[in-house]
Length: 498
Image 1 (spheres, rainbow, N blue to C red):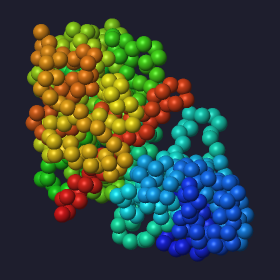
Image 2 (tube, one colour):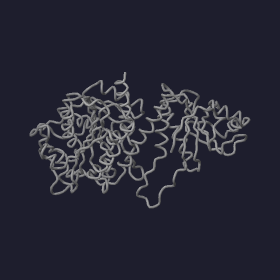
Image 3 (cartoon, rainbow, N blue to C red):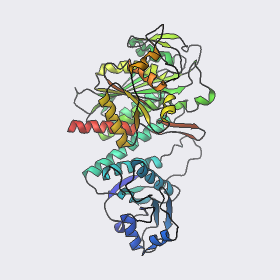
Image 4 (cartoon, helix red, strand yellow):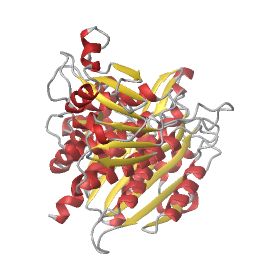
């Protein structure tokens, strides 16, 4: 699907279909007003007769509008005649594409970009239009013998001035959409295919496609030499070999400290010996979304040629019960030398991340952000709308919060106070890997914080946002938080230029 910027008014467009906005009180957007004039009042008569109310998200596809050259005109209700919120703008864009999904329209010009959005100008509207349209047209039918109907949309013309800022926004939107789709495609794979070895192979393929990337894959023997006993403990019960994948993106000066992303990559999580109930295992193929996100971020950064150095570390393992699996009350010595009493084998994500966080120290990173589908507690606290974030460095936390607002891939900061550290005390080791039922997201971050003392660090718990896991047909990867993290990197690059 091609995207094109065009500032031509609606009368000059040559396309199969145009998308225009209509407000709830019958007010017309500028392009709707122009089309109404061309059609000699057809739109106003339609509204007057109650055929279209303009309610937010309402759509009506018109054929053969009088005196209009377009085969089709799609009306989109925009609600009250007032600046839209970011959410409402994205909602309208998504609704418009959905309305065309079962048609044979191939070429579309959308004028929804002329709508006023609170705080944002054309570049933001262009970038988000691209991201939303690509998300609305995403399909994953790789394993269906009867494929979903192919989409006819070939070209989307976005009404916009074609200046430097909008061209950059278009480029960013396309790259982010690529990264999100890559992350979704990897995360949606079943665990009998998407094993730690498979993900490592995918990472190697990604690196071959981008000269600025390089890769190193640590095998079990390598991790054993390094003392990664926490990560290895998680993998003990599985026939699948664990991997630690390290990818470097070289976009900045050679000696510039990198920004590091560490992703939890549990390709399937049964809970281990602390076995999950059967229903709770549905969706556990998505426990590697943190690792998939890191790969999506690296792909996008490479496409955008961001002037930064980035390190991505994927901690890959499968958590299974067997005669060789680690058991509750086992004690392991982590790569950092700290000891952990494993009180619950289903709290495995923090174990693999602990060794990965220690490993990333060797790169002397400027900043470290880990991404993990870590706790069910974050879903209880925040639902499926925002990711949880905890940090040992408030300026970093504020940068991520700002990136979340700009990208509409939002996060919410939770406290990381010393009082919570008491909950992970162990009578026999330096710490326990669980802290009880209360404040589960916070105590998990407290655990990770003990392995992040040497750098500025933030933890993103994306258990409620990286995938929707309501069961049945409501299971799918979202590609989050790729947009958030790319926006953060864009901000860092802009600060560097300034």
